[in-house]
Image (cartoon, rainbow, N blue to C red; front, side):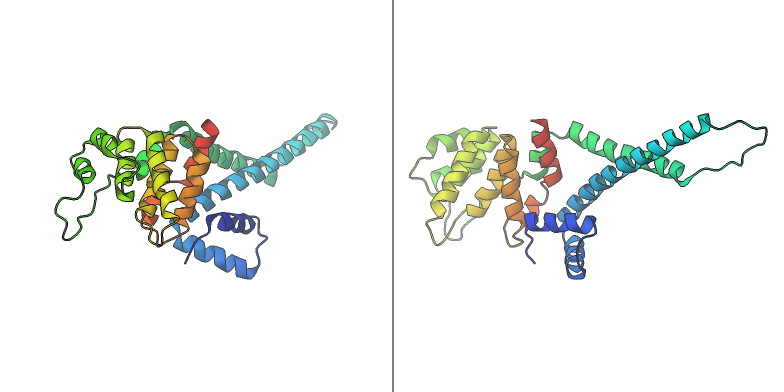
Length: 256
């Protein structure tokens, strides 16, 4: 099944507020059962909605309490001992406070601790060039890459280089913490391949470009690219992209 994240998020919002029909409810529940990342987004959205509802309830209870105090001040005091009664508002207020504190604390901790480097590291993995049968060494750039000579790769690459070589140059730039240079090479591969029937290293470039964009703090572009990869279970980096939390990416965008 393919997942369109933007469409699904809209559908989940309706699911949370109870405005879905039976067919949509079945679709959402199936999506949540089969997509852990989407389920994570659902939990965050549900907590946010509950917090808003509880805040409104807290205000309502506060208004009741104020009205109660005013009524009490206007009541003649007698010697009779009143029965000890705790209204549902009291318990609702306590529950509301507890849930708001827990939700807010969790989000605050995530907000305080998440950094571009942490999000980047959660999904980055070294790229190991595949060995092509019948080819013993590969190009000079491939050899430099395999030796971990990142600067050598960047010196050797040119406009005439193959898509694979430009892709390796992009990964080498990431290894040297040159995210802007990396993004440029990945974009070159993607753009060049748009005119080709075969698109070598396009999917690799898409994933590593998303990582470069996180390093560059271009979170909106990174999130859009990651969601495109997550929407295609056949994508070579589908499972790796799932490690990049949309929620954490959004939090980082608030910290800019």
